[in-house]
Image: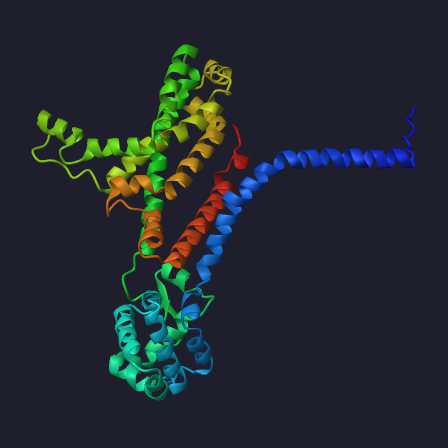
Length: 414
């Protein structure tokens, strides 16, 4: 017998809607702290980085009148006195306010070599009278340095004056634009693409080493007696209770010229002179593998602990050899943990900073160290943001490719 539909009165309907709204509001209230945390700790920093990568108002703020006057300049010859005189006057004002150095750094990023020229010219313009700057500002600039008589210099000024630009992304890809506006390979030193390649290579090596070391240990932990497994798991978790700086510094003591490793090898007679182990890619890989190994073991262990051992016993009882049974039965079932551990180790190692900075030296540094350099020393935040944005895009693309090819959703047993 079919049940009759329940018909609510108008008051009951309003009451039900209020109750539903109250429950949704309570659920949102409980989740809101997490949403605020993600907004301020994740969304806002990444959005700011993306914005700063193409937003560069430094030159436009320092010499706004010059940039405004150059909007009608076609770039075929040196600008007229309406531009050069204004530039000379603004350069004098910057010199008085001690801001000419900022302009010099900004212009030097577009055309290397302009830094010292801008600073010396600003000092000379500071000593000039305002009336002279209006009447013969162009001549004073040319007398200060002949580079102001070159149209390529003023093209660099106009290019640096753009508030929104993709030049930082071109620099991060070792590219640049020539005088005709076409994109070409950077004529100066090309370092960033090589650094990205080296970073990915080091991260891949660390991931493979962590897998080779972590998979057997996780398998043993999952199948060992409870007391032994708990004791070993405590040792796996012990590095999380130790400062990262202490763990990294310990590798310096081990790998330095007179460290434990070299001293032991010399004492055993295997080598006569100390090996160069520290401040190399080798030291970066070894130290980071040691630090990131628990991030591989824990996902593998959590998945392996849930695998029923009877599957392997059933395969062996039906005549299968141990190795084929492991490859066809156990390995596919452990792939979710393997995928999670590999992704976790790879993504963390790509953006690692402290360990490569301390033990890697020049040879073992990664792209994160160059990003920190531009933020802390060269003060080129825009280029640092562009490098970080490209790194983020690269990681997201690799993750998407990995998930499409060998992600957990594509795993098939049998």
